[in-house]
Image 1 (cartoon, rainbow, N blue to C red):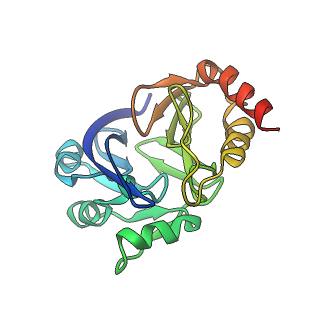
Image 2: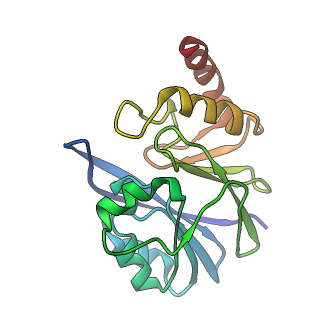
Length: 209
């Protein structure tokens, strides 16, 4: 049976390097009618809690440490009684937002998180940030890409801790080998597929070399 996927959209401020930008964030809930994981925790925890309902929350998974993906992680964890998971390479970003609270556990490349009969595999895809990760549900052909890959191409680089060549290699090596019809649920904006983004990524990668 395919995983149940719910999307919550929240709006708030992304802040980095002294700049503030209003953004809409996608928060993804994956599981079934009994239990769920929450992918990212942005801006306002109340609608996320409402979407979870009476389901058990296995974990709050932060795809990376930028403030617009973690700024209500602590409040959400307290409300849901769930652990927060973050790749340790983004600890320095986490600490800016949550200086007195640590994430509860690490994400690691290849790690598997099982929820409601669905297995999500962690893919470490640095570039947008050092600890950026995607989550792959291979059985359902679904990828939760955080800010690594969008409808329209790779995530933004050019700010602190980001690297264009690294994100392009991450996408080329870890994501483009996936089946072309893999649905990509992004951290912002509309869904896409691996096939729809392949040509653009390869062109950008060739230009970078």
